[in-house]
Image (cartoon, rainbow, N blue to C red; front, top):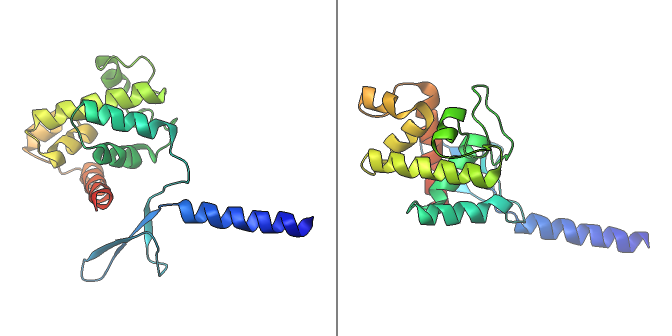
Length: 181
């Protein structure tokens, strides 16, 4: 009986590990960035964690992205960077949920409960779509506005020189490009 349980455990462990699609990134000394799903050295950093199951909010995020004419991979990249795909994430500044909506923004978007994943994603996608339109399709500017507010992007005529915002835009774009390839 123990042998059967051990064999079953090993088979299930291997099956689950094979079904994962984690993506890792490494930046070499010459600045070359490499993405892989099978890191060969310890200097790779995990940038996207995929499990064997489709997360319940993921399909809804894709539907909302399609409705708003936004690439679903961009929405997923924003969710990953904003909340680490944690439904109940709350930032130190009070941003909530998968897409880290601030209470005022959530209210403007008709989101009654920013901790409810579907409402949060719907509101976040609507907001991102509005920012992409506002900034003439310039994704980097729209992402900067998503993070720092549209006023900051307008004030600086582009990505504001805030380390948090610069890092946010860079990380979202890196993950977005990795998902597209």
